[in-house]
Length: 611
Picture (cartoon, rainbow, N blue to C red):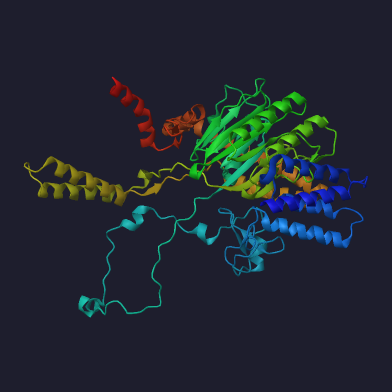
């Protein structure tokens, strides 16, 4: 925001503060405006945004006995602020529907007759598919499932398109002559193909802020949440873990987990980041339950992720230690993007006007955290209750324009989860896709006859005086071609899936999610009771499906396939193997295998050169 805009904003706050000075019933508004004036003097130009301008205008609009002409002046000043603010989207465009129809691309609402696919969870209007009312009413039964056309298509293997035995005859072969070609036309209606520009490397981050309350007993529910939301980052509190529990026993191998456990076994925080994102923990000297992780962004930028937990019975010294560590890390990385979440247990703070309205905690504890948030230039994005009627689980950021969505989600404890969708340009490790041959589906008969043909061709083509390298190349290429032709294959997928998550688990998870939103929307006792009942039922079905899967692995019949059993045991007791990302001489984190080898080899070469 420019200097004239700061001056106008300052006059706007002064006028608002003078107007409420004689009003005894607006203490909350006066405290909010006073905090805004103090923050303006402390932080200067970087602390003003369109969000804060609109919030101050909303506070002014509730003043009693305000004249109409004065309000027009305030509106004019606010419009000037909005035009000069740096976080205004010039062309936001139409709002995309949350659940669009895959045929007409219009929004699917509760009033519409629509069907959701049980596999991809995409919605379709019954009218767009010409579905009869009789068929639509039949699909209301929970025992029936429906799949869209895209999911019903067969998945062909690579060998299907490499068959060489298919031949066709062309009855119009006499017309196929190169002499009858008319050449390229002088003009055509189709435009020339243009070179497409590469898309910007902006990635959408899915973040979950979860209060676990003992993650050890809720592994099936956690894995179901990961498969449903596919989050890039998980911020967890109240893990109740100890040092003798490996992270690989709870999280899949596709995540790097950073933990800080409490010595007594309760409390504890963690941050789980997908393994394809380059990340590293930050060392902070603090006794509070807080942990920070750094993520490399493009163009040398940095993203700092934090997880905080404050016990309800903690003292003011504990809060001061936590806030001091947050202020130190923000001063250390001034240009970084901060995403800090966790459970602070501060129900007394009204985050709409940044005031204290309760006495559950000491006023000094609430005021210390409010001062810390304002001094760090952050904004709290959770504006809904996460446990009963209180907003205990928070999400702070110094770049609110990067947060696209912040909504509630059904949790796995008595706290609701916080689901955040944000944008950032992160550096990622390219995952290598491997080809897996399905030998149990191989056509061994035709493969054996092809091998006999390969042997006869080899004996006819080569003699004892032929080159060894030429003969080996012929055998190698022939065997690889036979394998590609007669053995079906598939590519490895980076998508995390659980083999025990059957159709019943997915169906009850969707029902629980719908009942959760209905209970929050209506607030009726029967809807809340139905959500709690479905939550317990979903937990029971998840545990039952997971236990059945484990029982089948460790049963005596599994001796026929010991590889599956020992693979499962190894995944429980070992963390990710390999060399972690390393920093080169310029301080840049490198994840490529060749560059990491060069970094490790450079000290050895230097020692030999000096010797």
